[in-house]
Amino acid sequence: MAYSEETYIRAPIVVVLGHVDAGKTTLLDKIRGTAVAKREPGTMTQHIGASFLPWKALEEISGPLLERIRVEIKIPGFLVIDTPGHEAFSNLRSRGGSIADIAILVVDVQKGLEPQTFESIEILRSKRVPFVVAVNKIDKIPGWRSNPNRPFIESIKSQDEAVALKLEELLSYIIEQFKSIGFRADRYDRIKDFTKIVALVPVSALTGEGLPDLLLVLAGLSQRFLIKRLVARVAPARGVVLELKEEIGLGTTATVIVYDGVLRKGDLTVVGGLEKPVVTRIRLLLMPKPLDEMRSPEDRFLEVERVYAAAGVKIVADGLEASVPGAPLVVLSREEELNKILRDVQEEIQTTRFQRDIAGVIVKADTLGTLEALIGYLKKNNVPVRLADVGPVVKRDIVEAAFVKSLDPPLAAVLAFNVKVLPESREEAAQKGIPIFAERIIYRLVENYLKWYSEQRELEKKKIFEKITPPVVVQILPGYVFRRRNPIIVGVRVVAGRLRPGVRLVTRDGREVGDVMQIREHDRVLEVAEEGSEVAISIRSKAIVGRQVDEGDYLYSDVPLDEINLLLEKYSNDMTENEKEYLRRLLKFKLKLASEIEFP
Ligand code: GDP
Image (cartoon, rainbow, N blue to C red; front, side, top):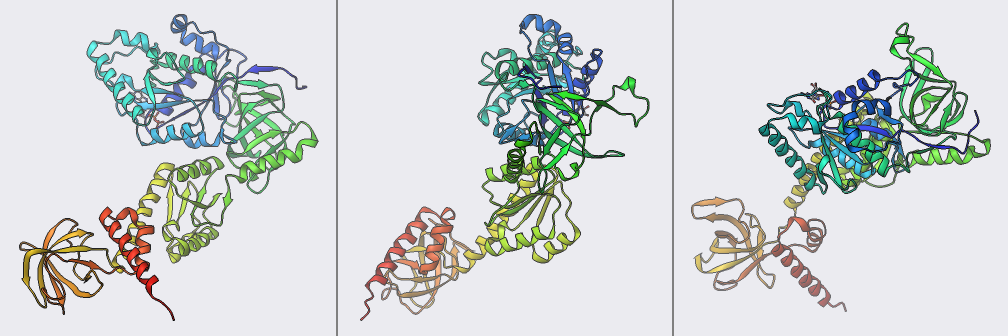
């Protein structure tokens, strides 16, 4: 078949995201069930890695609603990615964005937005993918009367007032939550401008209530705001590898989502690979065989000659084992293009896998998509990355982290997402004191690391603060001299800093008074007197009150120059304004003193 100048509107690629247990899988099953139940002869509803929901099926289930809304439908249906969650979504990557056109964010009506919901929103926002919120499990609201598969706006009419009010209350909470992260949201049937307001569609994935509304809102949004993206060409295909899978007798096969063009058996393609791009010819294109045509469990696939975007298809070709999920696939139409395409594909992968000569964490993930998502998340949290790669945690990763430890210990860590940690790496890590964080949820991985990081920073700080002279200024309170000579006992007000036993105090002109022995407040012995407090202190001292020091005098801790600089530069956030002010004045004083020393 020859390519042509022709273009057509393809089905939008839809992903489902949300917190665990919100009902993603149930919703997908419902959508798939609808697709299969309404399958028309000759249409392929099951793809590989995705399901196609043809518009005809939609029309049938949303009939009554469609009459009311009267939108003219131009899209052929939806291609819904079968695997929910943002790992699959992450792999639908394209240069800086996503090949997913629109997302359904599933939220449990009674729980509202949960940690992974926020994470999903962040990821969608960063990839600029619009989304509709399926506010799920409305059937669980006490007293709800189920109307299976009916539109929500009809079902709501048959509910008691108290039940409807309860739903409103739950929705307001969700709307408030959206507001707190800078989004306006509202029940979909109250929205005029869908570009500004996030649509909330109450549904039950279990009963199918609200599904017509959800799909119509998706269709409406896709047509109104995404139509340019949905123009596909009858040209060499472009796609992305969603998954690699070993199939008996076929070797490593790839699930590919085709988002533009037509992919044909025999096409020469460039597929992104970890070491270098794979140039390979497509031996077979496989789609699932409809259930009623399957003769045995092995007889799962149907060979096809070509697929048009948008489609999910399994490809069989040599060399795919060197590819990686999240990698692009580009069909080569002319030999002359090869070098440019190779370069593009390689470059795209190299921006995600990298090594830099900086102090930063080591990141390993199972796919390019999750690696990219992880790096994005770390970046948002201001965590520098030294090495990012796909694959198991190997010894070299630990060696890199150990080097970072010599530069900045809290950054010496390995973050491993969904990958193996080889035994020798674990050994090496234990030996070198490098923590390996391994998790199956991205945000939790980063969270765990960040928790450790701040603990390390605190420890580091504590150690430093133990060593250095704390900045302290106290004033001897007039009328509160209890003992004039060793040990001096006086009442003081802590003007700046925190006073602890052991601090050496000097006079304004730098003469030593002595070391603080004990701090008391009434009958209690204190370990520390906070800024602003008034306490009695004893000082081991050679000075005598009334001679070298007097009532009303200020006494100071003598912080050395290098410590002043360290405190002001690195720990400015940990000090009070008074402490900083004292250190700045002391610094000026010391520098002035130093400048007055003349050399012959
Ligand atoms: P996922 O982790 O987001 O994929 O959530 P699941 O689809 O596995 O659903 C989690 C649980 O919630 C399962 O026990 C589902 O049966 C249940 N569930 C999902 N949707 C609904 C719904 O609309 N109504 C009710 N009552 N239960 C639901």
